[in-house]
Image (cartoon, rainbow, N blue to C red):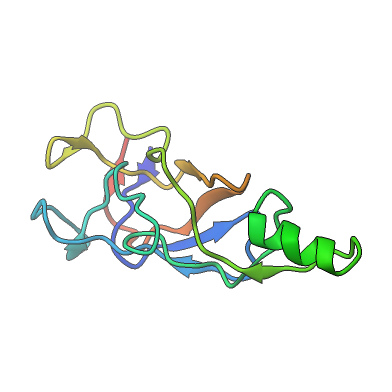
Length: 129
């Protein structure tokens, strides 16, 4: 069993220079550890997923352009998350507002080849299968 991810969880991207926080709006009314519980659909860039400092993925067009301008020297640029798909896997048995709950082992793919993972779930009392 994993931990239920909630508002304030710490996230890290494989191409990001700094950690970030998960923002969960209290739309469902479900709480985990006295803060809003997350679902697999809490994947919206800049609304749920905040920037990770500087991005070093060459698949990111701004990084590719800056690297080309620097004659091939990798040049990180500010991160703007590009997450189109939901978190995977979600909880198959726990629903939060009719959507699968988000567990701390779930991953989120960025369009620029990064893998976003949960470092700290935001609470440590509520578990989720």
